Structure formats: structure tokens, C-alpha cells
Amino acid sequence: MAKGKRYLTSMFMRYRSHYSSFRVLLILALVVAVLFIYKYHSNNRQTAVSDDDGRGDDIDKLMGEVVRKLNLQKPADGQHCAIPHLNSPAVSPGNASCRRIQPIRGSCQLANDMFLSTPKESCDHQQYQTICEYEEMHNAIKCYNDVCDPEKPVSIATTSPDLGTLHWRSLPSIAKLQDLLRNMIDPKSRQHHFGFIFIRCPKLRDEEEKDDEDDDESNTNDTPEYEYNNDDEAYEDDLILAGKHHLVGINVYQLLILPPKIINQKAVHTNKYIDVNVVMLDSISRHHFFRSLPNTVQTMKEINRRNASTVLDFELLQSLKGRTYENLMTFFAGEIYDVAKPFGVLDMPHKPLKTEAMLEQFKKHGYHTSWFEDLCWTWEWGLVKDLLAMDRDLELADRWKKFKDALQTARIDRYDVTLSSCEMLRVNHHHDPFHGPEALCYRGKHQHEYILQYVKYFQSTMAKLKQPYFNNLLLNTGHEDTGRRVQTLDDALADYVEFLTKQENTLTIMYADHGNAYGEFIEKTEEGRIELYNPFLIHHSAK
Image (cartoon, rainbow, N blue to C red; front, side):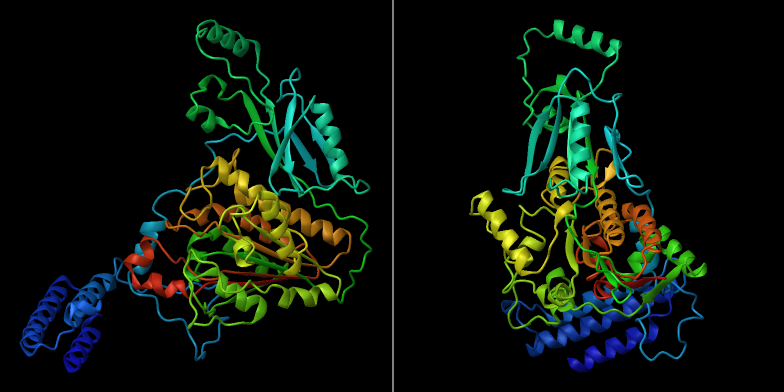
């Protein structure tokens, strides 16, 4: 049997480069014939493995494997798939002894068909309306009177420091909202916030809209009146589901991102300190980074070309496992997971993520530490699980306290804008972003746009106050089964990379923990399984 397998494998390797239709048919016919003979003899000798042990018949497996490889290896364009490079190939050492395995022929065409054959999703189906805006240059807030009905109150939601969830309350007017926001960003004020505020107000309507509404009300006398509660977090979809169609479109919503509140910090930053900025994009292989984020790649090339800063592409990063926790544990604590003690995807890890192993060293030198992600802490994924702080049997206040205690042990000072993720996921009718939506939008903008905006405010504020920091940003835009949603990140990430060129004494490490671990691409081609363990790694060093 083993001899027969070696013969078939040898035959396949010898002929796999010949791809005319006649040769493929001939090879397939020979394979089937030989396999039939071996199966006949193996059955007579009763040497085939029994299905009772769960492994199935070796010959059947071999036959399926060879046929599958013949199908997958056939290229659509007749050419090998190129390995992408950030720098020109001439820059890469030509005599390198360690190289990435040559991509399987035809896999690039399959990837293009699956990922790039249709336009990327957008948030254009929603309208972004500015009730208030923050002006970074002057550290000022300005609210507008042409969006909200001035005769009705305005509602705001901030994160409760006791519960970690949104708390809605009412303000009498836009003017009062503007006063509140100005106080929140005042460096002398001690009013704490988490870097964002949700705003809701009744939409300002013209006379024609009011007349139409009066007509609607006169024709719907039998409809029960719905009294809108300012504490109610109802959105259009919720109203439709509740049968309250007449209230759809009556309100305007905005998520306003604010700079972080840093209170009474003495400037300690000197040239001996280097700010460390880690950006992890979950589930993006190196090839998928280059195929899905062309604007970001082009921006990096332009940065190197004009010598604005230095962008280095590390081409041979090997992932330890196709899951985030194990790779983060190695990154922060240098620990390799124990293969003898596995745990399931839905199980809790055996021990908490030891971020303190690294962050404690930075804290000793006066660094601020932060961790921002796009997951909801009240659900079952993300940092709350990795730190073993998730316990959904507790009351909400106790859960929040347990998580805050875990953050303190992990030596993480700020979680801030992450707390806006619960609401953005909620209005998209998802607890997490791992199986949709195709674009995670809130009022005309992608979720990652809001988070990246806050990260830019955070870095600029820390630089202005001369405070050294270690920041870890984790985005799951690419962690879903279609492999396409990551394209929505391209423009915002390219803009962020350009922003980094102006951050002095800052080292940015941008990487993925692994490639996409599920979806059609990894199911249809071996290249997807190769990409799973070949994530990208890029270092950006400002001048």
C-alpha cells in the first residue's frame, strides 16, 4: 500500500505541470485505473483501514486528494502567482535561503474572483449628519442649529463608570449640549469621559414635512400613540420591528469622538523614550493584505519613496496557531501554548493573557498603556475573555468591576473608545463582527473610522503633553468568512499610515495574528491553508 502511494505521488509530481485538457484527462484516467487496481487488491487482502475507527479508507482518501489537487492546481491564466513585495524585488536579498513557499498556481485568480470581482461595500446607504463637531486645532466644540428641532430636548449617552454601559439622559437644548461638551474637553475640567458621546435629537423639519405629518396623524386616529422616552435607545430598525413606522426618521443620531482626558500629568517625554504603537489586524494573511488594501500599500510605498519615514515589510512571519489568544500570549509574554492542553473555541483559556509581562516594564518607565478594540465587552469575545474576566452569571455592575480589576492586573490603563463598540454592533443586529455584516456602519461611517479617529486623537494628545505610551489597537474588520470586508478598511488605514509619518519618536508595529481561519477560500484551495500561517508584519518608524 505504501509503495502504491509513493508511486501515485511521484506520478502526480511529475505530471502536474502539464495542463492541456488532453493530458489532464489522461492523467486522471491513469490515476483512477491504478487506484482501482490497488483498491481491488487491498480489499481482497483486507488491508484497508476500517471506517469504524473514524479514519476511513486510505485509498478513498488518496483518490480524493489527487483529484482535488489536479483540480486546484490548474491555473486560469497559465502563470504562476507572484509573491507581493512592498519594496522592489531588487531590494530583497537574492540569495536568501529561507523563502515563502511558491503560491499554488491558479490560486491568485481564484482569490481575485472571490474577493475582487465586485465593488467593496460602503456605508453610503446611511447619512452622516453633524450635530456637533470637535475642532482639534483649537480644541473647540461647535454645535449647529440646522439639524435638531430647537423646540425639543436633546438626548446624550455616555458610558456609566459604575456599569460600563451606555446611560442616556436629556438636555433641554443644543446650547446646553454645546456647553456640556466644551466642559468635557476642557483640560482644567475633571469631568471624566471615555473619548466618545452618542447624541440623539428630533430632526428639524420644514413646513411641508410638518403638514405631511399633520395629515398622517389625522388619518391614523385609531393608531395608538407612542410616547417617546428619552431613555429609550430605539433606532429605525427597532421601530419598524415594533410596528411604529410613523416614528422612523424622526430622530438624528451622531457618534462624536473626543480626545482623551489626561489630568495633571507632568511632562516626562524626552528623546530617550520611544512611543510604541501596536496595530493588530485580525485574520489577514500577507497576500490578503496586499490584495485587499491597495491604497494602504501604495501609501507605504510613497512614504518610502519620499523618505518621509521608514516602512519595513517582514515577508516571512510564521503564525503559531490559527487563533488570536495563543499568538497574543507569545507576543506579550513569550509563552508558547501547550499542545497537550488544548481548549475549544467557545471555552475559556486555561490562564489569562499575560499582557503585564511586557506592559509592566513600560509602566516602570512612566509609560501610559492602552488597549482599544472593536468588540463588545459584555459579549463573549475579546480582551474580557482573554483576561478570564468574563462571567455572564454576575450582575452587570459586578461584571464591570471584575473586568476593571483584570485590566489593572494586566497593567492596561485605558480601554476608552472600545466601549462604543457595543452600541455600534447592537444597531447592526450583531453581538460580534465575525459573521457579518458586510460593512459595519454607524450613521454613514464604518466602525473602524471612529476608532482610528480616536487613536489619532490619543497619539496627538500624548505627543502634545509629552507623555510616553504603549498603545495596542486590535481591529477585527478582516475576521469574517467572506474575506471581503477588510477592503472597507483600506481608505481609513491609508490615511492613518500617513498620519503616522508625523508622529516623532514612534515605532508602529502593524501585523496580523494569522490569516483567515474560515470561509470559502480556505475550504477551496490549499493556498488558503498556507496563508492561514503566513500573516503580514510591517514596521513603521517615523523620522
